[in-house]
Length: 118
Length: 114
Image (tube, rainbow over all chains, first blue to last red; front, side, top):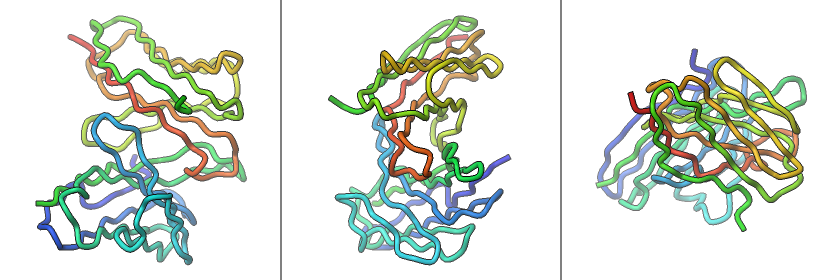
């Protein structure tokens, strides 16, 4: 079954509005979650690391005031795209790292959110 | 030179054929190697995970890592139309966890013709 649940799967919004995307870890607690953006025929681009109870860590070139991340509990992280513009249209995917003991094994991904800004 | 190179395809093969997907990389510190499958409009799904060099088999899928050549492969035997998807390789240099050390290829679009 699914390990990571992401909502909504797709959303259309008007330019200037804000959109919130939720990512839930279903099988285990996650102190860290990751947000990716994916363009057609391009690699996954890490946007930010969401940290439970503290500020998110953003990758270079990603505007933290534009992409607000909140990780309020061990199972939920949210990404809010503020004042969305057409260039923000993309496929956003969250992921949760899976560890066995102290060893990181792999990432489990949500099913993504396709955002279209008109 | 990019850290991870992967031919985007598309790669089109007839049903039942053996498929070979590959990635090359430049960072000799990579130790953890993964293959993900991504269907259209879905998130990537972990297929195979290997540590260091060697082979790993899981059903119709075999992952191979050759660290001396910095080359990894995913073989799919008896390919099915349902295997049609984009396959992404990913690799990491440490076990401390986190996506910041994980590098993805661009993905190869695979089409299995019925």
